Amino acid sequence: MNATASSSGPLAGTRFHRNSAGVLCCEGRPLTEIAQAFGTPCYVYSERTLLQAYQQFATAAAEKNALICYALKANSNLALIALLAAQGAGFDIVSVGELQRVLAAGGRPDRIVFSGVGKADSEIAAALAANIKCINIESEAELHRVAKVAAGLKRVAPISLRVNPDIDAKTHPYISTGLKENKFGIPMEQAEAVYQQAKAMSSVLIAGIDCHIGSQITSLSPFLQAVDRVLALADRLSAAGIEIQHLDLGGGLGICYDDETPPAPAALLAAVFDRLQQWQQTRCSPRPEILFEFGRAIVGNAGVLLTRVDLLKPGPYKNFAIIDAAMNDLMRPALYEAWHSVVAVAPSAAPEATWDLVGPVCESGDWIARDRQLALSAGDLLAVLSAGAYGMSMSSNYNSRPRAAEVLIDAQGQAHLIRRREEFTDLIAAESIPDYLRK
Image (cartoon, rainbow, N blue to C red; front, side, top):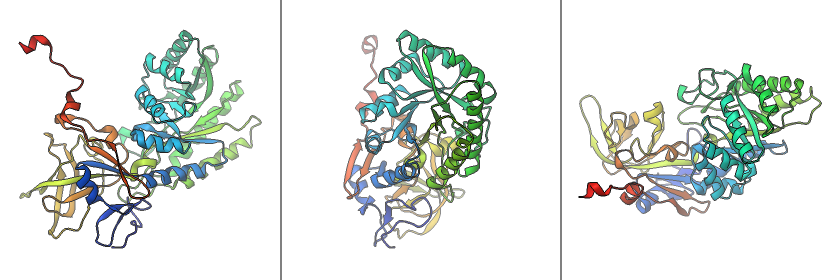
């Protein structure tokens, strides 16, 4: 194989490629070397792939009075946050822990928006103390909670109402957030009344409208339907004397896991800005700032999960390859029945067969891939592709398994350990045995 990235599929446009010996590399660094140096399972991220993905959005939004926010829930490693903060990215957070991560990594608080349906009083107070850009309100009850906390601190909270436009994003039910049966946001038909309540409150300042309809969206239509409904709401609010400073249009752009063909970032933003321009021509008020919240589309294909085949268990009904990565390392297949392409890191002389790739966790749901045609031998190294988003951030210590290491490969091919592999002492550091049990 040549030393270029694949022209299609999950590796297209990334810095992962095969060298002349057929070994999968990142920035010219063989992943076999990474596995040897840091062990498996191990998450490996390409710095340039991450930054190139972000820059596609940033370039498309240039000179548009827009802010590209990175949705931290996709992957919250401090090193990746720091890379994006240095590029001027904003950040979409859903917890005080994520707020603290952004601040620790050098992110600007005035570029942070706080989403999520269940913010605690302490989280609201921390956000106000940090002077973040905006708190996205998800219910009438939350509006009153934020107003009360802000009043107690003698602060004025900048807010947007997250509206639920009841749009089917045509994605997995677990990651659809814009339907009326979803828990997120305020129903569109109730939004104006809640905005009127906010207008009467002295401890909140109406800053914008927020809308996010789901994740792994692979067509333009749902995005544009949501934009149209948000703009119609903005017009109704303006007629009622409520002017909006920003429109937060969320994120959710999908990536290629297998054969999906989502819109390119430039195509998506061009279509959105075209709608906004048409709308603005009918208005006399200043053009609002536009916010976006992309996570998976920035980091998803920038990462792979390295795992080694422990042993092979062929059988009359199923062939199982037991690997050292498990559902605690990559939850998406067990949770969503999500597809991740899996490739051998180096060529194998073994005959090809159909395998289920399963982990050592004591659950039948512990699988990474099913019915894959692979040439496998015990000890072979595999790469689970498109693992940069919702991989490490959703990992756990189930079965008392230490979480994996994370490694960042820079543009020169140098490997940096950005999270060490956990040890047993990490697993029990927060636990204690009462004295009466030590007798």
